Image (cartoon, rainbow, N blue to C red; front, side, top):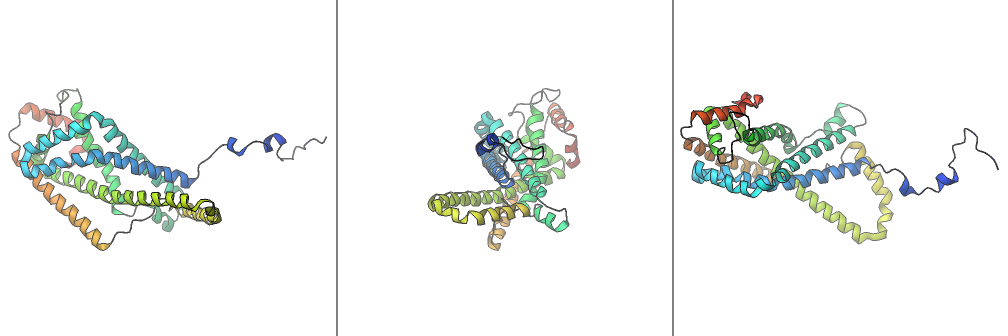
Amino acid sequence: MSTPTPGDHSATPQEASTPVSDRRYVPTRSQVLRVLTLTQNTSAMVFSIFLVPHLASPIAAVFGGLQVADKTMMIARDLYLPLEPFLVYAPLTIHILASLSRRLLILASCPTFTLSPLKLRLPRQIHQILGYPLIVLVSTHILTHRLIPSSSTAPISSMSPSEFGWEFVGYNLRKSWMAWGVYLTLIGSAVWHSLVGGMKIVTWLRGDRKTRVTENSQGPSRLEKGAQGEEKKKKEIEIGQVGEKQVVVSKRRKLGLRGLIVALLGVISIGLARVASDTGPISSITIKRYEAVYAHTPWAHWWR
């Protein structure tokens, strides 16, 4: 029986008999992108359960001012507050991480760091670009309107939801004109990002359903197109277009969407104006507690 030489790298009978399933599985880039896209879209849909009733308060303020806005907010809080970690913090964090990871993976697929291929992988749509400043705006909003007010540190002393309502918003609006810009920018950007992102999710759901139906109906004949499909996937990976299918929106729909955003901001501006006018005298103790909230968020003073 001959013995293998040191330079002989041929597989031994034991290695050759090792089943393929026992080998280490490494997912492809396209598979990772699909998982990240699924995570990004599903987390956004869960977060929308909180976002829709949360935006009802400033609209309700148009009809009833500060008092109705507070009542609407309390009703919404009763709906989502028991599940706040699962409806707000978890999906928002997952959505941000999945979106950033997906974008970094697309950027990393660039074979050379030349300007032209790199520009194709950077966010180009408005709702994608708005997502990045929204991270700062939403994080600051959560800190100043939810997390910091619940702190036990004096003089905040764990302000309850009944103590910390739309009066705080009215106080900010009456103190600084910058607060108007921040609130309207936050709401406008969030609504645009959500609406266009929702359209993409609907398109993604329809495409995924069509893919499943096609796969089930084709059966074994699908093997005939296997080579072409693999080649297409490789090209998509090379240019970073996996999961980057554009949603074609007609000019009429774009104008309608922009008009809807402008009209919504106009309505909310009326609501904010009513909240500011309905905000009466505030005790010095409450003002100290309000100011302590911003003292714990130093960068919030940039727009106050």
